[in-house]
Length: 114
Length: 112
Image (cartoon, rainbow over all chains, first blue to last red; front, side):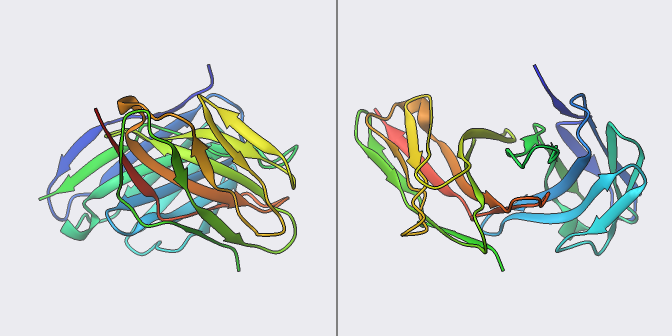
């Protein structure tokens, strides 16, 4: 079964810490995405990557960066965590080589910044 | 630009009731359309999809038909169960584009 795996289900970090959220997919997908999900705001795109070492800003990139050194791994980095980054973070991947048939999502990481 | 509008929730139904969650979209060209489901504490799962006009996507008793003339993709189920309680997201993707545009989600609660 194809999978997108996020390294942690729950994380608690302190304000000012550098935080790494990891995402790995085993489907050889070229495109990977990071979203955050907050009540009443739906899913908001933070960053996405369409190839190794390539990245593009989404709708809310401020305070975040990403890394894609290998095709299967896409990392989200909170440079200096703040309480307003407390959220559910969702990773997704998709191939568009034969059309876009929808994302595969990971299970999510619920991050609390205290 | 692309957008997806779905009905506000929450929707509360009794078990075995008929479900409709409305979804309309705005997009150039002919996008692919999706419904995703998110169970409590989980990520999103693809529930069904349709890639061209008049296609019907179906899965687990849920159905949705791609209506180009009304730019709609309403989700239906004939008899809901308590286990269907979740948040449902309508979404679209333009041909050749990686990004998927999501609606804001509709929470469904099914009571015994």
